[in-house]
Image (cartoon, rainbow over all chains, first blue to last red; front, side, top):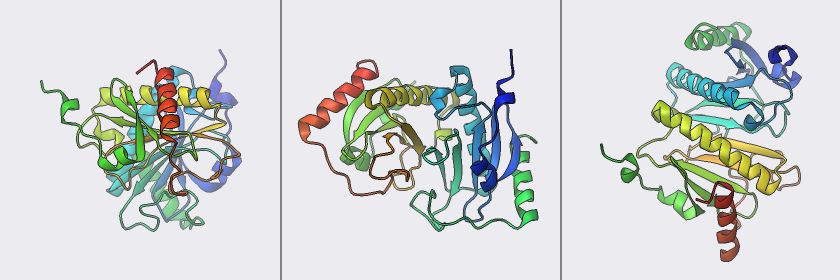
Length: 141
Length: 141
């Protein structure tokens, strides 16, 4: 069998907007390079998938478990008041699941963060350090 | 053991905004009373749950399977070009998962539908009929 992950390549828009965190069993984890909100993406490393239901059922189950694990990390690491978990993908045609830590004091509250305002990138070392802490929370990717 | 579903009551805002579709094993299914977008909600019938990760793990697995089933129905019934699947819940403090059928021609595209514009309710019989078709797609709730 060929490895389906070998045929995967990250969409260039997702690569441009994010800082790498690491790979879970199925998903690549990325930190949105935007200091406005603690915000990660999970991207299943499978080619030509746009919807969660495009994945084979066993992989859907893995994705949901990875979303839960990522949700716990984002809640605990940032002491999130609310999590927003969304698969939208109207703009970028590669499945990516947003997990965002929200606060009643954040800029966009109570609106969703999508398209809220231009990203404010992290200072380079700060972004890498935060990605490292998220990876550690996810079990040291 | 007490039945956790017995202690569940639908949040009044969700009740006000929707037309009942029926109950899956875990989730109540509701049609948003808004002709702008084909849009349903899944609400796990458990009290005091705000995040998917607040559910017990076996119930999280059931919820994800119900989301997948609902996604297939929304894709097929409306021939959706894209699905948007989101757990946000910044406004209403009861877990509810949005499943929205999207089209490049819809009013909000490519933006998310949340907070886009005031709802345009269905004519009463049309709303009931659509809810019935969605229920049939979900196996005749």
